[in-house]
Length: 408
Image (cartoon, rainbow, N blue to C red; front, side, top):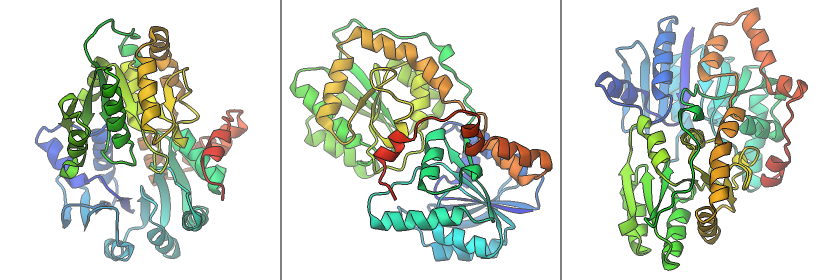
């Protein structure tokens, strides 16, 4: 078997080199996936990881036996025709799609290449063009050459079903989570006059709601409510440092850059609130930031993003505010941090929420069982499909997803 892993971002070569020099993970389970592919490569004719976005074009065999290819594209634009040229040269017999590049997927199907979907993002449908693109994608995912469509999290899996992918092909999956909320005790609201510490962890962009957080902090400052904000992520070009300066909050915002993944949960634990402010247009799966926050037992303030709707319930296990609404976010923060009973309730409920988010299918299970087909593995896939989950009686409501997404 000549297996190709196709991903939009996440430079595999860089991660391997970083770990070889004693570096740490940039995000949760990164070493788990890097090592998993290295182990798999030893059992195949060739395993290639093709990353579309990379600082340069490259093609090399790494020390762990994995062939790493960098497409050299930057930003959001990827020339799919050039990606197809690269894949033709690599001559894979099987492809795992971590990204929904429709032209590449259509080409792979025409070439009779066996395909596994391993999608980790939701699909946003805002206009007729999105509807058309989504129709094309779901049609392709339902083709026989696409054997299974793994989707990160149960909510994004149900959304795929709503959009038209066959439920019997969809396999909800997640990463192996080792830290549990049992590691920490529930928190109470600190009785202090010092500024409350907020923390945001993730990519820095307006669609992730980072600007909304800054504007909310500025509003609270005008009301003499003391806050400090720690921001974990890469502020490319200093866009948000400039925004903080323009809002006169630069002295209360600390940019930490990229930190080791092992430091994320402790940082959240020492904070008073974890922020997940994603706007609806951001293609969330179900962010690991939420899992980390639940492990830290620090209360969450999150937007009403459709991918959160089934799991984050306002004033039950999180404070939920209307996305892209800085005044509402400011009011939510003030309410949470002046209501000790609410604060304690959210922290207490974090364990139950974390437990409910667990899925039996892990990344490695899904990939390895597909690579090594057998009647037992075929039965395993069927028993873990979304259709089987629903048939067994686990039928979480689709109403929140349907109402929050544009119907096709």
